[in-house]
Length: 251
Image (cartoon, rainbow, N blue to C red; front, side, top):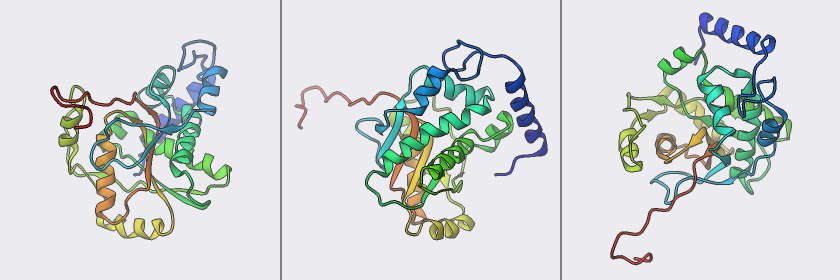
């Protein structure tokens, strides 16, 4: 997705303001820099590992996250995504790279293909940038610096608008998103060629119910490029639904 001249100017101004104006840490609201040493250390050494809802929604690939969705990580993600704290993309991308390495597991060394969750055109226009694409590119650079070449393939597109997800249950979110994403035909052939012999990892900033990632995995599978796994910066707590009344847990 291209960024207009006006949006490039906005991004440049935001970067300049971040450099010259004193600010509190976006994660913990202390200090005089956008990312204090303690919060930077949190992103630098995340306990990446398996994550996601229990049970997972149908179609959700094996999912790994760098850390739980809690402060200060929650505030850092919001600052980058909604408040234009663009310099946080590098440190957050480092955490995403850790989740990707965890998701790859014992996969042999070699290039990896990262497919980011898409932002809507309206969201990109209003924010002045595509936060997930920015994070994915930062993660790819981090992976490359540590001997795992990574290519970013932003091929997913929205087929239709969806209802606001807030307030919806997990099953309602799954129904709301079913069929909402696609890989355009012109991109599918190129994606297949690039993915040949490479593990494909679906990436996002956050996972809650897993419905969005499951829909993205479906769209990739439909063009013959199923993801090996998914990776996110953060994940909400894993929850297993209580057994139905009158049934034993093993029923």
